[in-house]
Image (cartoon, rainbow over all chains, first blue to last red; front, side, top):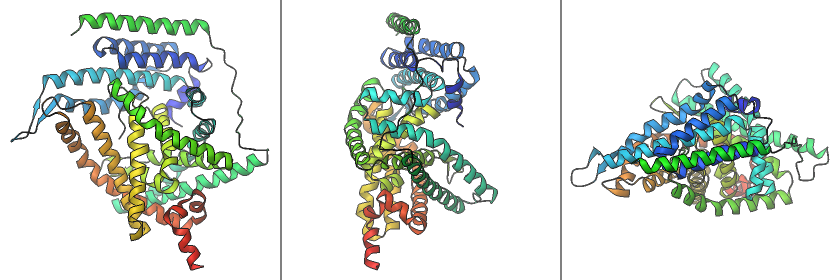
Length: 250
Length: 229
């Protein structure tokens, strides 16, 4: 089971209408990307962390763990923005103040945006976000395929983990050559099993009168006006503060 | 290589999304048509997509001892065809963002372009070009060059967004490309070898499965079999 998915289903907000969380996290994400990072990004980061940890009750440790890996990549990549490469007669790398400023902006913007993604992912299950794709013009069959994929990928992941463990127990990853062979066998097996599962699904569905449309029950959720208003106000306050502070910062 | 959330400036993020959309529309139309004609195709494509997600999450051994992930674009493109792969790849990237916090929503368009569009199309093109030399060779080059193409596009995207303060786009391309070249060329070769192992096993043991996804037709294997009969 994926840790993000576990919190997405068990947090305090999981019973609410997903639109509320999409408005809050999506709006903050947009603000973080568009407004000047130096003033807005820290605000977005704080508000999103507070909303996820205090509001939705996701443990702070889980939130930070989700951020840790992408933030690590970010930290590893940023120094390259601050360095400039001179391609003249004698190519050399040098520290560049302009580059450093870009690196600071990008780092802050990216970190704030990541917190929005983590906040949304940790509070909202994928299966509640996918139906929203229908609203932005994704055709019904593609949405159904995505929903079915979400259901199936945990099954395939389970098989992949079991297969990998069995191979490791037989020293299948001892040398590079053997690793490639083992991984190839694993992938080929997973492919065969995935198709076999599709066939079984088809037989099962055909027996229940499948004619091409997968009908699923969506639990009825009411969009709460209070929470929508609260999210809207938060967005407005963060945006206004970010813009105002942005004028005083370099 | 995923570009992380919020890394690209808003204009670039929006522009890459605009570039990716036509490919997705074509792929989605194709999927809609296929699944109207054959309702079961939906189940097949969903299984294929789940397989692609897991494939991209498997760690591949690397020469330096560190681990990396295969892009899977080569295998996906030769098994399912590039236009369908664009849509499946896009869904996989969306899931990676939402389930693993890998990649991002604002950078989804840029990542789709490099990993779900350019990678599969380059792989598929190579596969068709090299096919006369043998299925194995063709699969190797498809997977290896598909992987490299993905990385080159990502490098280009980063260089366009962050030109070097002194030497501009060319400098940035050298800078980002230099980092990737060291790690990525060996990984591309490994992904090529790995994909050959997978396809060989499938040709040997799962001919019916390959038939079902249309690989036989694309690789011209079906004709060979007819000829043998």
